Image 1 (cartoon, rainbow, N blue to C red):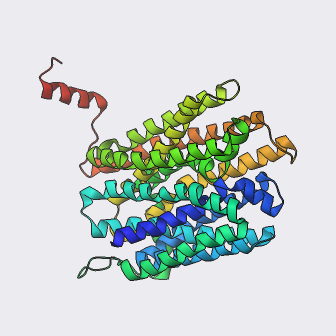
Image 2 (cartoon, helix red, strand yellow):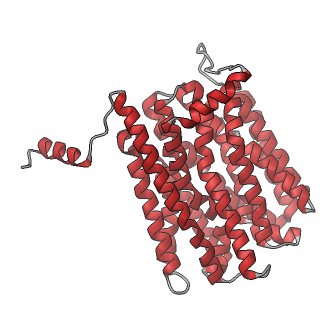
Image 3 (cartoon, rainbow, N blue to C red):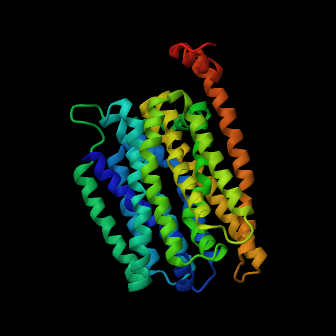
Length: 428
């Protein structure tokens, strides 16, 4: 029950977070501006979300999940309510800042509940299931928020979604507890003067750094696609109807929900190969993007489906990043460490969204952009992949050296192959 209530609050946060990604054209019409300007709403929200992760993580380690989940849900409701009532861009920007702060409290708080309420071997799977259920919020953004805005109008449509967050806040207060009865709540109260050294210790640990780069590399492209440029690319760049684009978005969400438990089970079963699995998922995304962007003219539907599926599976890949701090840091430091990990994919996604918006406005001169311009804008993600893959390889090397010093040695692939041959009685 504790976990379920927390996940419900998180899924609503994802719904509110994703609303502008699917209703970007409606938002541009409401505020009388361009989609490029609307992209700055998303950039501001995601930047706030990313920058809030470390302070929220420190507060989470100090006060626990119940307080942070309640606070985050109420702040999200306030921000989305302000966005509904806004008629000018300044108020809309303030609303997106509030939404980013509230959203930053949610996922990390749910993750911190898991080691206290479930046995360690179930945590990797449940972490993925948490993200999987949270993806229902993306489906709700397409299937609930967008139709409400289109039918009822901008203001009534958004206000109706705010009511759900009020219900979630009541449920969290009533149902969430930081730890099982009789157990210590696992919160820590550090003197203020020790907070900088604590942040430094968590940040410089190779497990935190590897988690950050895993989240960054597996997440930035999916975030840019989901939160801002996916629908415009499918509609304008690929010539698809709004309904077809919405169907591909729904497929992405459903596929991520299916892939999450599989990735979680593989993580639990092969803990020494977690980063290798993520690298395979990342290379699949790179290959699909290359095929779509190099295709002359609009890509065929099967290729777009493959792209959406690769982005969907990479989403759960970001969740593997949380497993490195969980298995290498004390539970009283997980709030801060997970906050740094979460920041990875959202920093990357935020910067990519901003760069794409600036590039499109520059190429289009403030007017409507063309399919070719959208294709060129998506090419900006190539250096992000290069930096992220390099970060994974370097931080993994450092973590494996630390693990070897503690007696945990990751065997080479040749040693694994030799072991399999010996077990099967095959000639070597």
